Image (cartoon, rainbow, N blue to C red; front, side, top):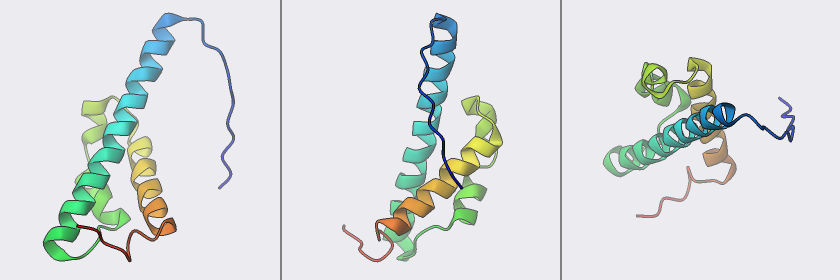
Length: 93
């Protein structure tokens, strides 16, 4: 999957507010995945998979004002980056 980044300038202040709210919501989901995974690894010595995180975040999109696909993509990206940086093999307590 290729990611294309587009740099644009938004002059409308209402659009900026919406984008900032969405960015905070995405950051909240990422932090939730991180905190929940560390809690699970301390309790069970096992990292949460994408399916586990998807189950735990089900329904959060309504409260956060996001699309459900966005929440799922954040969970998938979290698991991918954790594996990429080998967090699944080195546990620091």
